[in-house]
Length: 111
Length: 118
Image (cartoon, rainbow over all chains, first blue to last red; front, top):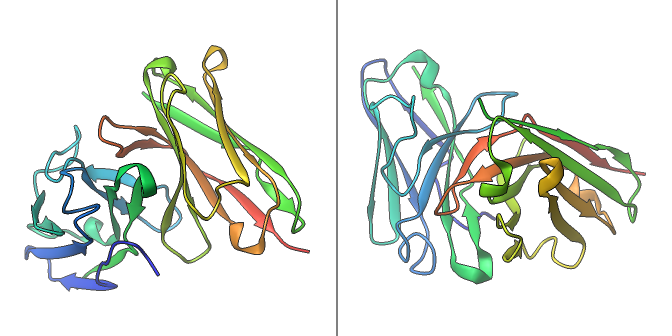
């Protein structure tokens, strides 16, 4: 069982928006604005898409955005494109006890 | 361009040991804290360990504490993961990654597969 909870799947049609949630506790997601999101295509290494809840690394399209409310963080992908189909993982700093926790991952399907 | 290359994976029997390496290039390695993250076949990502740039701070997941040791050699631009008392459930692709200021895993290697099986 993963420490952060994500829905196992999400889907949307090209051009639509989809939001993926990541729920933790006040000891991790709710306690720090240190949530990251990763994209992983089959057989590839993960790629950082967002960090510190909503910051985008250089090269990540602004179609990817992040937010947080309480113990739940969210990744929104707007203007869905075929290449967005991938697995998405959230992670959060969790203090010195657990340090970093990952979510179980969400498989995003572009219909 | 930042490049991380893991090596040292392979097949090992339960109870055995293995040492993974991660060689970094395209960055000032001494300025970066580092993570090890693993992914069991068909499963999600699991954070394994973290070491700060100066080695002052080291953390482990409970699942590997006491069995895995993270270290680095800044002179060789290298990160290591010494693994002992390996179990079937340690079977995974192991990735090294640079750490961002707030513990994000920013740049990833291609991973090295560790298979624990008799």
